[in-house]
Image (tube, rainbow, N blue to C red; front, top):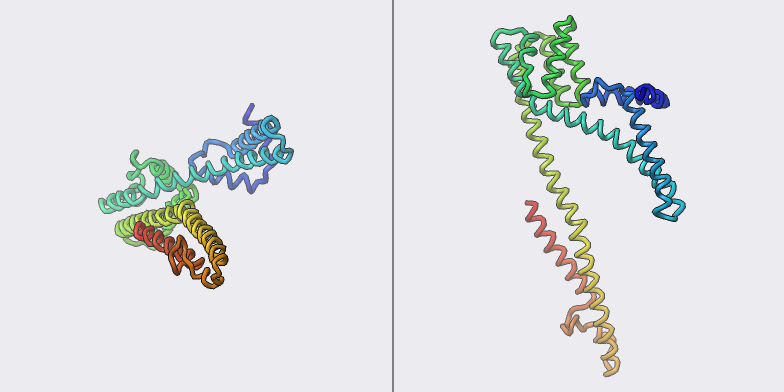
Length: 294
């Protein structure tokens, strides 16, 4: 009963949107669930949350603008959460397959060197420790033994997994099968290339994380600190200069002499000197943070 109700709700969405949601669900491993049912449930749930906040918001605020802004904002967040859930699930499944793919390719290569055909070698590589890749290998083998060419079944697998690395590897394998190349050597090289790419991506991600931490630290802590220090020096210098100017005008000194007076009674420290102190402090902190990054 609920499935039919959800399907009727999702009828408001165009077929293109349903197709995109269907692809994400397949890539995330939710093939048994209808995309129309998922879309209908997401819409119904988001609308219920919208009504809840629409009637609850007036009890917490008297601002009439927020009475509409808050429910619509929550509606958008709820709908986006369902979409992000599908994307993150598909990405997580793809990362798991990418991590185990080199080992699977090497097992297939060893099976081919042992005298198996490419179809039997792929079927024998389906192992429980491979996780989601085991399901994909079993499906490829089932379609292949059912009469579908191995090239087509491998290309179909790339549409069920949200992975550029797997897509490139499969294209190389399909090209090698079509041209009749030495498959065992090709699979070993592809596996080694995938490992190198994965290692490089991890190094790039680590470096990016360090720079992100540096930027966040500089924006959240360093910048306000330097701004407060420079503002303090500027205000203190202005107060001292005004006091000196008043004292020296009373004793007959010229305004030029008061400008040469320093901060806290030290000669040679003017407004520019305070700014220089702030710049120097920023340079020292920047050098310290740079040393941490290095």
